[in-house]
Length: 337
Ligand code: CDT
Image (tube, rainbow, N blue to C red; front, side):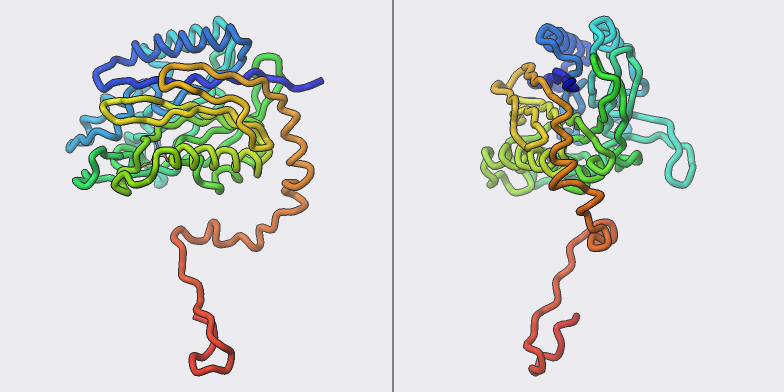
């Protein structure tokens, strides 16, 4: 019998700086209900779904930015979303800014800030938490940019790795679920760590501007969408999994986010795509057993991977220069550096 799950992506249109969380949560409940009416058992909401994408705003005093963070989850404002999902028997994925009292690497209790996402089950249990690992942007105000991207200022690098959990979703005893947040999708290492845990469905939220401010805006907007889709499609194909990628879209605080939310199958094909820049639900009926083909043939990791040749992947961060070729016996000596 097919292991079938109707997956929904709930793309959110813009959330302006002045808009309260309650407004966003009301919109999300509306999207949840639309997804339910289409038979979905699981809904993916975007990265930092409760507020505007605040890393575009500079706070000289970092503590001022704490207004964008959630100290509890569910919070008073998000409790209605949890309650409605439970009533409808639906699971969901939610991205938010997390302010936690948690021990750091040295075991010291500290106030910590993360760009976080959770997977919530149909009975309201938090199955899994993930904290964004690849934080793009910069930590200080950059006068060359028309729009800031201060994720490195407001968040710490996630400390939970890339976990996967096998958890029940409507109609299924267990689905192997994992998460990524936005920029993570561009890094094949992240996909492979999930693939090595037999992930079947990757939930992923993003806020991606149409213009690359770092490059002075010269990167064409259609290439920004292409690179996003390329990364997700390649990740799904190479790791034999589905992905449900939910964008924030439209003009938010004067900055355009490109939307183009998608659902991708293990062949790397886009099987559903948003077409608006507003609140929109897309769904796809996902037969999770389709993950088996890639996993048992070309990407049978246990038979074909060669970790002994991959040392650089975990051994270094930046790229080194290769040795310069020199003709053997010539004046230049050997080709070794
Ligand atoms: N939110 C996020 O990670 N956005 C980045 C844009 C980076 S531009 C500094 C992304 O990779 O989509």
